Image 1 (cartoon, rainbow, N blue to C red):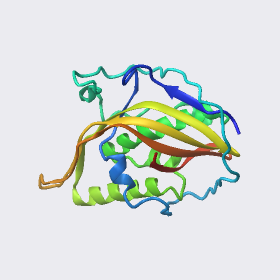
Image 2 (cartoon, one colour; image 1 turned 30 degrees about the vertical axis):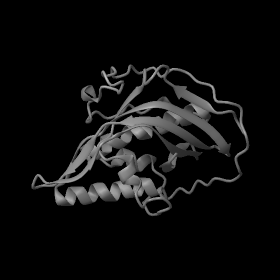
Image 3 (spheres, rainbow, N blue to C red; image 1 turned 60 degrees about the horizontal axis):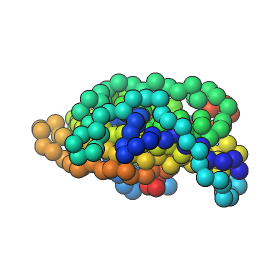
Length: 222
């Protein structure tokens, strides 16, 4: 097994890569682990088991961070929730830990764009057909659209992404994030869900390189 690779930000909370999230990961994860469905026909599979690896290395993220507030939390207010993330070069690069970390970060950055704009195509393209988190997110957003529900707030900062190869181009990437408050609002203005946000929470993104493409296999609590 290869050694782990990390993209990490020094200091209390940053510099950190900026991400906007309107429907919280916690909400989207509820009840979705292990669910199937979806339209993709590729079937990449994990085979082999993980073994112990040396401590991860780290490198600073190149993206500037939101400034910290007086409380030490990131200033989420300047984050634009509607700008599509730039696809990383790693999408077409040979697999390694660095590329896997970038793919996981891209997926996290793509999520809020999908929630806010309801443009599901890029999210579907990178999601494995049996990714429960991915399928549940798509189902919820389609349901929201049908009912006229909009999502507000929930900006998120990714502090760290640490990738580790398990076997045969299958990687797990542990991401540490802080998330701003968010809410879902019905067509009549009724607040349907409110979330106070969270700090330094870890989620695990599984990614797989298969037939020259990256797929997100699942996202789970860390």
